[in-house]
Length: 234
Image (cartoon, rainbow, N blue to C red):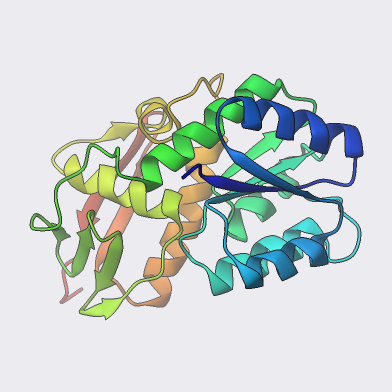
């Protein structure tokens, strides 16, 4: 069966353009002009991915993103928006979107990001099997099941947060550059937009800190990130 994508945008021509390109790639697409209509549809049946505009009538896009993320932590969400300030981008990613694409954009770029995100959250991942969990101190990720636990308790992660941590765990013995992370996670040309990695790290650090975790994501100045395990006695 084709994968289902919900597209919500207040501009009819954009909805139709996105739908046409995604349909051409074999996806089944439903479009919505209002945020509350999208939420209602998701209550009936969750799609495989959501493409969501921020400036949408009814329930706004950021609120929709937050609601969807709370109810469906693993649902892939891509925000598309004409708002390109760092604050808007960070807000969208903080609320749980997996990607943030600024208008105007090439439809083929959106298609590439949709495919990359679905590839990461689907069966085509180059990650260990369920019998090979990734462990780092009290943090345990099960790639096959796509579940995470911290100190034996479930840790709720978005698809991109999960893959980000999984990549760091797989490369725990070295520092990983921002560019390498972007290429490994999104598999598209971000034109050196390394803010995406920084925004994601801020979100993950907050989640780990709120749980009192010994696992820390350290910044390697001017390069990228590495994992460290804080001494429990300090």
